[in-house]
Image (cartoon, rainbow over all chains, first blue to last red; front, top):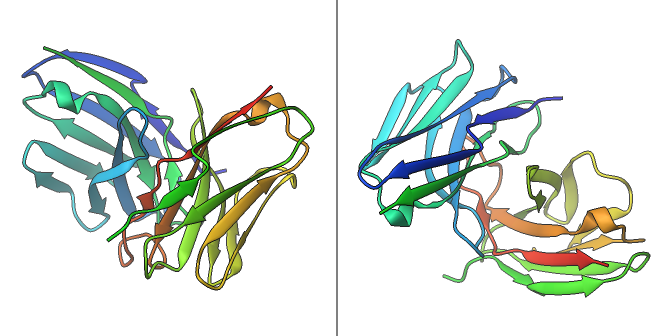
Length: 112
Length: 116
């Protein structure tokens, strides 16, 4: 079936450094790629998304890039802060599944 | 605007029992999706309901079922509970399809089920 692979599963960075999380997908029909942040004890929350007709999107310290040919997309967080510590999920949508398919998550730890 | 509300937040059951979880979507949202979250497996899609009809279904056994009411509130039921059903069950709502032409998927805080 269709799936999303997400790497790394854990990521530890120093405050102020950049963090990059990568995902690959298999459904060629997918055209929507959101990223969710899940803080401890809470549900996932959308932080940024990208449509397939766009190669890059930026929102302050967060950016997402998409390479449809290679079927991979990445989340970039610059100038990381301790409050960025959370689990991040990538997802794909708009494809044949009709629902969002999520990666297994990346636990990001930002050390002060 | 109230968010997605799930009840109960925590519950403990024993093997063989059944459980019903409830979800109230954001006002105006007609689609409700359910996901199972377990350590190491991420979020796995259970099913989606739209206007009281199951529109999409994941690869879970028939012990997992759901329904949606005319006010868009949704319930999911798990019968004959197994130890492996211990998980965080997340409900999410959206206006309609989630995608490039659709809206965002909003999650509740989840119902944490422990099966002993």
